[in-house]
Length: 287
Ligand SMILES: NC(=O)c1ccc[n+]([C@@H]2O[C@H](COP(=O)([O-])OP(=O)(O)OC[C@H]3O[C@@H](n4cnc5c(N)ncnc54)[C@H](O)[C@@H]3O)[C@@H](O)[C@H]2O)c1
Image 1 (spheres, rainbow, N blue to C red):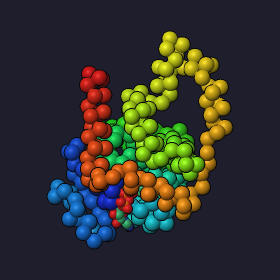
Image 2: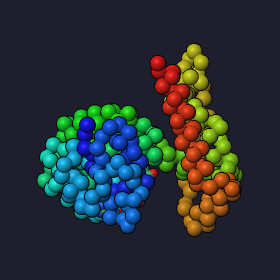
Image 3: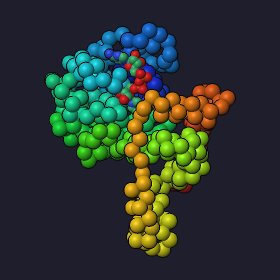
Image 4: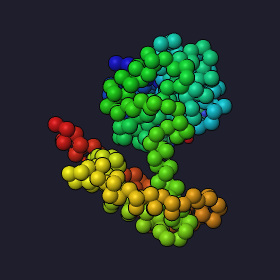
């Protein structure tokens, strides 16, 4: 059993804590928000002081606010308190690990990004992103740790804004917002187009292997030869929306209409039930 420090117990930290507990780890958590301790399962040890959380930890998962100066202040405390061999992984969605590591001057080599997808206790992907100072030992330890809690760690080959999967999502959101801006599709149309269309395939095989399958015996080579000129013409028509207050309001109004009477609890239950079903189907396939 490993002792894991969960630093920051908001949306992501709370979910990480559930995952680590489910895999038999001891979890020590910290968060300055009033009532933070009460929102966690009883099995979590809550401490006020981040240094105390890190002091006896074998792995540190940082999930504080997404602001570099806040992360730097926090990382300095964690770096001073944790054993030198302990990995400090930040859940950061967009900050570069090289920039984060500047907040840990004693042992920047153990700082990396371990970026999960919401909710981390269900969605397996964890993007492991080393910075310029990160050691191979830290990367290896993080990959092994995440695999040990049933995740799919993916080591990224470069530090990019938004890592990898969020860049892919951002490309989709860009066109989705553009279609709403142009008034040619609603939020409900866009969500249905994905949930009842390619979204169902993507959990099975991913977008490029999906194309490969669309090519029949000729596979991706045939698709690229046959259909790519059309895709290239379509690229020229893709939008670059500007998030004006009017567009933001239109998106909010339309998503409110799209969800109707369904409250957040019902929507979260539906989202998580579909994720669980997809994971179960895949694990059955793998056997
Ligand atoms: N929400 C997502 O979908 C998502 C997905 C992947 C990664 N992330 C990343 O996870 C991190 C946390 O995001 P979130 O969505 O859980 O945010 P959140 O606002 O829900 O939680 C942040 C928590 O940090 C706490 N905090 C503030 N100052 C702190 C300090 N000095 N020490 C410890 N905790 C402190 C806050 O009280 C709060 O509970 C961010 O870096 C974010 O980029 C978020």
